[in-house]
Length: 265
Image (tube, rainbow, N blue to C red; front, side):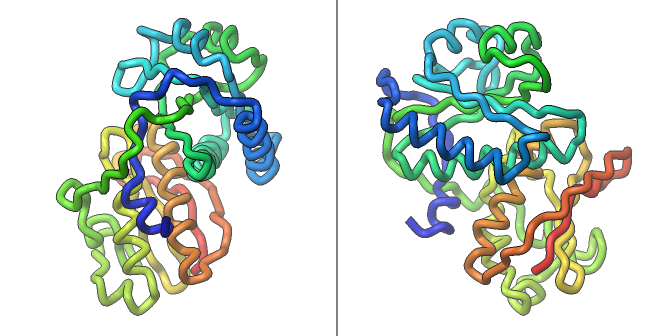
């Protein structure tokens, strides 16, 4: 599936088949997780795979879930940030989205699960870790419904509502972005998931630089939103060889627009 088509049709799996991941599949999952941590930085992040999905579900049922409902899955992947640097959570969300792409290639569905309100001691007992902050889970398994459904255009911001030229508030036109080869990238980036579908990300294109901001910053949930949209921009940017890394330096304050990161075209 083309990258643009995959991102356009990317949906969460709520219902999984009651089938455990076989050893061969689990080995592939462990390998991709290890590779992702090397890429992102072992000092900042850890991913924990729990293949006993039943025990995780029983421990968290009523405490965590997608929109308050715990998702039952044969396996779970936990993101653990090892320090209090906001950039670590941004990188972690980026890494989870990258893993979702790789898991999808194995025929596995996924769903983000909120665990921010769960007692840290409960999380530690389930996933057997000492330090850090377990920020989110990813339910993993074979989806009951394997059909592909595309997102609709009518629930997404227009490009000029989240992409600006030179300064915040100066809406970009399709022509502005087409001249830089960015029109299709941002057209498909609109399909990136965000908490409550709030689409809080805002971009300012200045010369050959893309600056990412979050509007009306609400804490960790928006750091996750930032990491997700950064991954989408990178994947879509492959079509124009936009291979530069993001410089992640969140400037957390009370401004309407909070700076998160930037990258060069």
